[in-house]
Image (cartoon, rainbow, N blue to C red; front, side):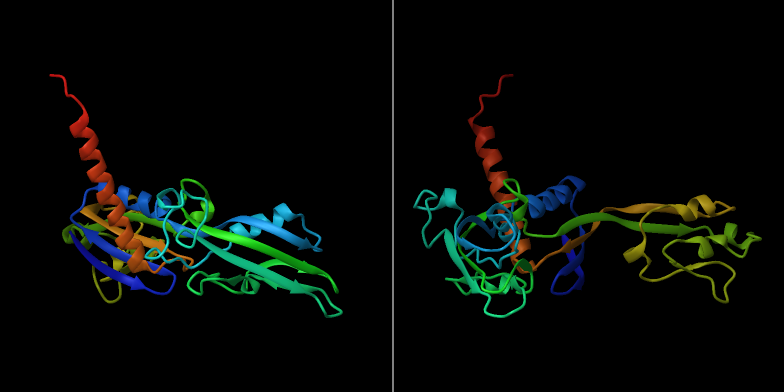
Length: 277
């Protein structure tokens, strides 16, 4: 398997992976999307709420705030020695105590949540929670635990993950030379992948495969049927968008750890089955 990173930023990662089957590509996508554990608020105790919102609405908003995650320190509640009752190995406490001492309404943000672990904090301190009027208060305690998306979408490690086939486009130069339309394909391509400047036949941009969506409009529009569009065998382009709860290196590492665990589990269960011939 070969992997080449195309683009990497704080919240986006794209790469080309070659030498894997479509079944494995889809398994990787599904694990990233639904099985990587991350931190999220799961329990809220409202001590004082003078805001116009019900306690349940505030609790729901708190649960959807992305929190930075430390997978080396914390365990899933079901794997913790406390049995999931809550201990420093599987639970983080966050508190919020805000009093509006001004004469104007005060907005309370995710940055007002104070964590007992500086590694587990809101990814963005400017996420609005609620607004309170003058002399009003909001006092609450919240408890965050690890979880996976299969249980609730608030435990989602990425905002989006998808892949597409690696495109391959071929020209028949002899047919292109006969085209009377000065290549309608290069003008009609929705992704502008063709260059027809000072040439008798169109030329693909060198990085056309980064934008090509395999819509095959060039195949349909070419009057001489000189273009063939296909996919490179066992090669895929992945795109991952993250809200910052985990670094991309940890996401990829954890993905393959989970994948190998599933393979080992399958082998064990298969060996335990008495196969009838």
